[in-house]
Length: 263
Ligand code: HEM
Image 1 (cartoon, rainbow, N blue to C red):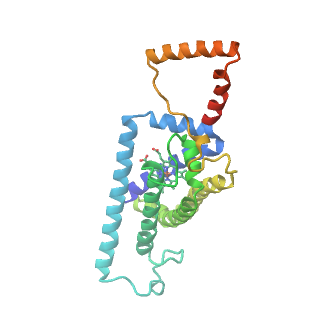
Image 2 (image 1 turned 180 degrees about the vertical axis):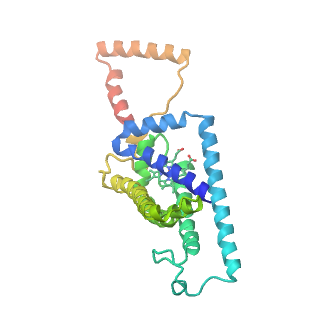
Image 3 (image 1 turned 120 degrees about the vertical axis):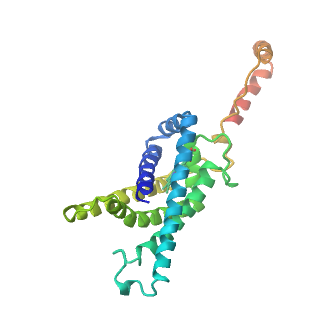
């Protein structure tokens, strides 16, 4: 569990670092997203690896929780009275880790529906740049509230998970335990605040700059391949338009209106 937990923390750091580019600007974030998606098979391997890590982590957690319950016969009725709380007042760590882990899993499902599967019917995904897509999603109340709640539970999960993984890996010395706890806490706060800032930032941007659903202004015109025959026709049209301009025709006057429609 410690190894999978550590690797998942690594993913969270890299993921947050990439997402913080939203604050730098549309170009920086879109470039990053483009580079990420142009990795081809490498990205696919990383995604399968990440998925595997989540599955192994969840299966091991499930085995640990059930194993602990069976070893005890049943869960403790009065956890705090036994003095076995995890120090944060949330009861026994295994119970609390299972509850917070389940909520984080719920958050991840919503997150994948939003970004990866793009199944939200209230978001007009087509043609949105990665930057506009992130803004449009983070601005919806469902994602804003769902994500912020998810981050809080992620923080609570990691508050026990991070010091615990150090212990499991044998990095455990009376002299350094306090330091590990403080460093772990700062790490967790950084992750939670970093992610929460993105939701806050998206929701304080004027909506005109974000990409609301069905806003044609943010939908790039479809890219179509031009065949040689079409190019020839287009050149003939241009010549005709130029002629029309010279003779005061209407062909040229129609063009700006067309362009406005696409913007
Ligand atoms: C506001 C904060 C966040 C934003 C803006 C964000 C954004 C994104 C985006 C754009 C993707 C899709 C990448 C792609 O198209 O390949 C993604 C994927 C993902 N995110 Fe997040 N994310 C955030 C926070 C988190 C957190 C806190 C977690 C974990 C608890 C997380 C877990 C994932 C996972 C597991 C994937 C799928 C990875 C993949 O298969 O590519 N994200 N996220």
